[in-house]
Image (cartoon, rainbow, N blue to C red; front, side, top):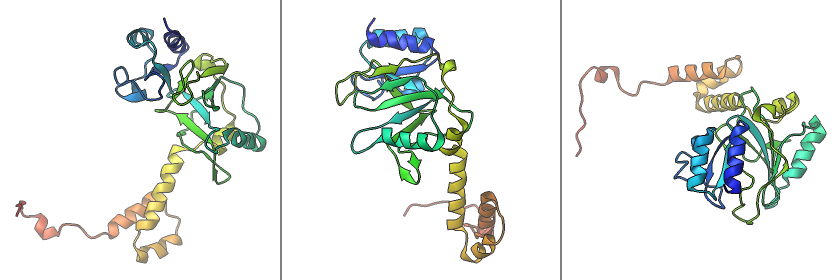
Length: 242
């Protein structure tokens, strides 16, 4: 077995779900992962078959049951410094598995919180974009001993990975104040769209009332005239190309 096959087998036996990326690449191997990271498996037999057929493929780890802080320190980004600033404000995070990438960045693995959090590229902190990405759910990271496509260096475990059910949990303040929330984002978008779409005559009255975003959308829809006149809608009609 190659080092890639051995590590992939170890990871699934620790409770993780893995899939193949192309050799020296972050891109999924469409032969074994036609749906990208969705194709990841936790079945040792399946994983063994994949790496028997393609023994030198990089390893992708799907983040369906983990949350990862992806720290980027290249191209003018200072993810390490950004992470330190959050620690200064909210306190430290517990020690857990840390993977060093082949280009100066690293991944910190934690339990996936029960909160409905979402992944993001360029986490915002104090209103500014940082060099930190959040990988969770249907997202993935590349893990050791994969080879980085740009530098040719191997990913390594700075702190070795543990069983998935032994991953450390993030402190509540980090979950509350740092992680983007899926439902909150939906609510903000809905309210912004409602404010933008509500008719001018209706908007002034709504501002003085405590309507929810859904109520505002409903009121807006009630103000819109029907697209098809009622009389016309009662007759059969056909389209003719001219």
